[in-house]
Image (cartoon, rainbow, N blue to C red; front, top):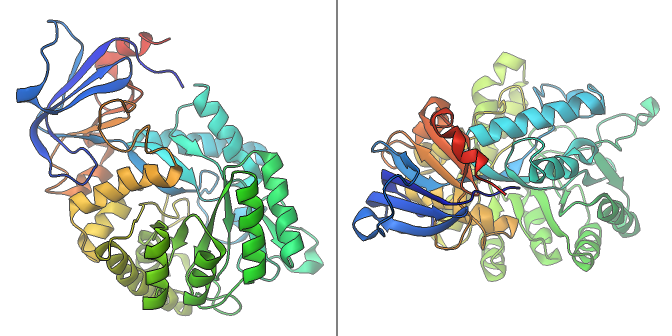
Length: 431
């Protein structure tokens, strides 16, 4: 991905560094050759020559680009299970994924970690983004997912003989789990996404208290993935599934919905990050009837919302790490509303706006293993920056409004936002 050349100043805004430190009023960021040369109070900023290109935050907010830590680029308007695996051909899904990536960037998300992708499209989407073929967040790819036979992701009856190869690799036992990971190694993924537990969406066979993989299968995934330099994550709602994932050596947990004291202690001991992804539960509760969602499923989402919110509060208060991201791409959680996750954590879970933004920037970059490059506004890091009209610490819902986004920068190049057209010439100053 190209980075800018020359100097750029972003000024006249409240500066959020993303480190968890208090915001800096009247902040300024200086970029030199696409990287941060200064970030702090305007009073201490170095003097630059007159005519240095600049972006005026107009009294708004200057902050790190957001990290969507549970991104499904190939999900689109999913209202039924078949929408996930057999509804669209790979060619159309590829175009949808590129459109979703562009939209995420326009929403202020300069980086994202895939939480699973049809046909391994995210592997090639990452290559296209890094090659400047299509705009999108800096991406970590996970490709096809792994689940035990008969588990949450194995919904097509055998008599249909459809298979699930495009979406998920189904395994029976540790040998098949190792073989599945080896397939993903060849495909070029960075993360292995697994399904240790069920979900409220499948109350009859694989509900949110059901296990969908054995410990031996999970451990085989981890050992094989780590041998090849890959990381492992898993959809973990049931308490036993969370514990199994931690004992197996998972690198992150998705959801960690029902965490108990013993498992919380283990999580903290291993410093394993969690991506709760809770707005999906809220949207399912609010909009489920609109999509004829059975009450049993809605009731399950209520239980997951409450359990997940309490787990997230306990993890953060105990000093654990949380990333922000969610299952966007369903009919009731369409792409483009990613920041509703942040609003939900402030308004419902009870996090402060600054805590939530730290999770959505610094911790997100840590989860991706790229915190030395982005996630906070510190000297030497890439100029991946979001400039927003308004005070997001006073009203975090501002981040939901794309009309309030003044500029989205990657490597110091303005890629999106209201200010893009007026400073388009900056994009030509690249190598």
